[in-house]
Image (cartoon, rainbow, N blue to C red; front, side, top):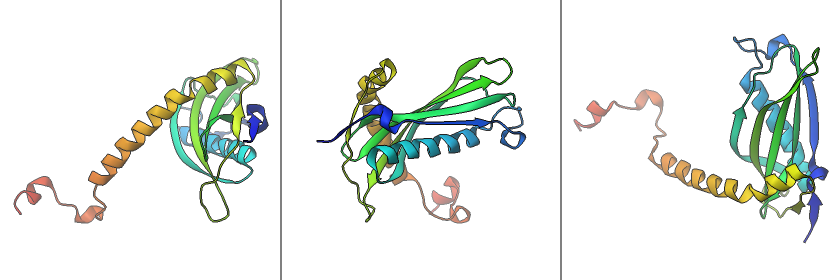
Length: 180
């Protein structure tokens, strides 16, 4: 069985916040942050698996502090745990006041990626070995997140089975349906 250290998948990307990245509250637009964190997480997944990867889920993105135009924003990601073909990626987003030097955790996120072969079929990935206190804590708590992910996916499947796929303009109101 192959093993890799968390650090081997680590990606760090730092960007400046520009006016076109801002929302109407003059803070970093959440959609922009989400796109950037998916990009860095995908690189961590590819580094760990050395294969093509797809985003299977985004557990959560917890926005903790706003990011202002006077800040830089750093994304740090790495693989925290693996399954057979899946990889849990942790992304830590740090805002830094460029004039003050003050740093704070602005957001955190967990994403799951699946490694694929050339036929787009899942393939095995190396197990991960945590080394730092942070990596060890995230690795130890990964089973709890995996259980929650599995439960959430089952609920999503149940909901999807209930939802209509009709064109929105063809969907009748409840009072129209009960007359049938």
